[in-house]
Amino acid sequence: MFSCFAGGSYPQVEITRGWKTVLLNQFHDSLPGSHIPPVYLDLQEAYVEAVGTGKKALTAALDGMVAQIDTRGGAGAGEAVVVFNSLGHGRDTVVQVEYPERALHVVDERGADVPSQFITHYETGKRVLVFVASALPAVGYKVFHVVDGPGKAFPAVKVAKDLLENALVKVRFNGEGQIVELLDKKTGRQCMDATKKGNVFQLYEDVPGKYEAWDIAPSYTDVEFDISGATVTVVEEGPVRSAIEVRRNFRDSKVIQRIVLGQDSARVDFETWIDWHEQQKLLKTRFHTTINTRLATYDIAYGNIQRSTYRNNSFDEAKFEVPAHQWMDLSQADFGLSLLNDCKYGHEAFGQMMALTLLRGPISPDPMSDQEEHWFTYSLYPHGLSWREAGTVDRALDLNTPALACVTKGHAGAWPKARGFVEVVGDGVTLEAVKKAEKSDDLIVRLVERHGASSDVTVKFAFAIQDAGEVNLLEREETAATWKGDALSFFVKPYEIRTFRVRLAR
Image (tube, rainbow, N blue to C red; front, top):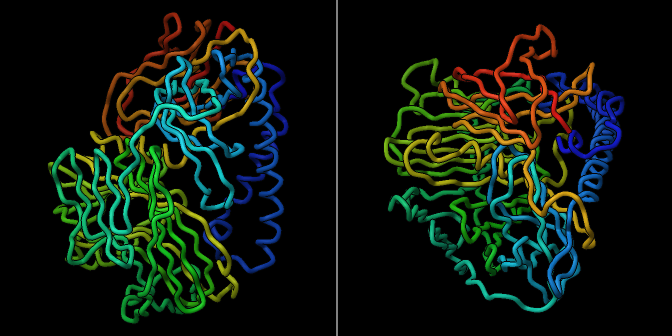
């Protein structure tokens, strides 16, 4: 996305080649793990090449932008960290960057201290600097500086082996790392059933028959294996985030899970590593909530679906496992709970329970399916009212699209220390693509309505619009668009996808 504003040549040939490789490998057996083993060797080789192409283009775009930014700091300021936000709305988030560990503090573009600390990254094992990046501009950047020596002291997020707490939420755990209390302080609501608990790992026998890699039989719960026995320790305590770590060994597998709470966040993250060596088994995590609702909502591409939380007929019984992308939600009239994830797509809701399928171990057609290490994160987000008012879509985007940080020396530049390039103003509308047009140097901007509502939308650009039109997904059949100055405006219908060609005065 940033390459459209970075200057220099746009690597259209390379991006197109990489994108076609990704599309080629969207075949239905390629995605879910239901191919024979040799296919995945080819897939891995193809994806390594495509990902390498994307990383090369992204690095060149970010470097091109950083070179144009004024990254000079005040007296005593060390290196600059330029934080990029690719989302179409501004946000507050936590940034991670590899940096030599020493006594230091981080300041924003005005020189004000921001909370920071060093942690061990759960996936790479490297020590990284994390800090709070507030008010990041939409599709833009903001400059921070690393300063040697201690800075302002910020209070740490409360943590103990059985507790994580900040001003927004309070979470209590038992000795298994299971949640016995989840209090949303803003609403005063208790979200978890203390007797049945939350984040309950359960391992089941999974032998659905002939089509092992494709199916989950509704009878899988008939045989469950005991995987109790965990150790809980405090592993992080700081002003940005605190965490406990839950270690669990069962059968031939191991789980290390870091449960994290940020200082100003209502989102509880479960950063998870599993060394999985189970065959014909299914692993779920379940959350037994206090929420009363007949329907659960599930995120899908460019929209959402609802399914019953009860199984009163054969149709609902058949929908016990529901595919979803970045989140699912249970909400009653006054509060709710969203379950977010960054790569796990099998969901379940039954009564007041919500669940996420973490891993399976089919032996046909690939007897070694998923027999390896896995890293993933899922999150709980308690909220008032419905998922729409609570901004669940934005929380899921923040988890799945982290801000990018580039470390650079202080230098002069024509661009200011904070700047946004594209901002979407309109409830429930997300920016899905900003790219160079296929047959011109204009921009293609694609937006989607995700709340199932109609609204007026304005898209603001950093430059004046010279010309604009609306096109279809193939960038053809152009019709007139409404624009004035640097703003494009339109009326969007529920779940509508809109694509515009925009020529900017740059």
